[in-house]
Length: 263
Image (spheres, helix red, strand yellow):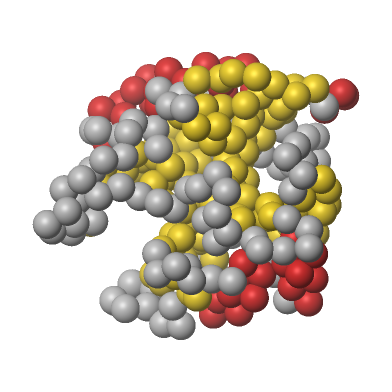
């Protein structure tokens, strides 16, 4: 695959109600989530209007809920060797939620957590037949219906930056002072600013990633969040560059963000 080390190459919603998630996110973001799974596992692709895919939706099983699982969005990071990445993360204070396994025709993946407990996947994808240089386009800095920003709220933001830059080839450059909330430190992958790390707010139960989805109109999307049974916890507020963002929970309790223009 053409994706470089540490690229976000897929995003996944884990939810107990994929049908409700379809109704909600189709209205909010403008996606078309599959109405039913195509295979035996309840996994549904998220379609964009441009014909691409934004990620997937996986049904949370009762067993996952009994084990303490909560609805959430997770990101997949590209690595050259999943097994080596798992060993390195565990040796550096991280943990393994699901050991490496192969998905035929898709690739090898594992679910991990960083030293603060924020979960994420690592993946070595299998290139599509006939297109060995294919690259993921689920992340974009400026296009609607893509993930446009990746934000980590960390219990120890300095340690988190050291962890991700060493394991995934990112660099930290630049910051914004948030006063009593600390520093908002920007992350770069290659020449692209992909997100930021901030100190975890006290009311947040644990360290976690928040992914911001691009929308065509932040006020339209905000109204769709509340009309669809979601809950906005911050925003819309203007961000550098003139666009607006908000933080919200979907009706099942998964946290997410939106970013886009005000029209």
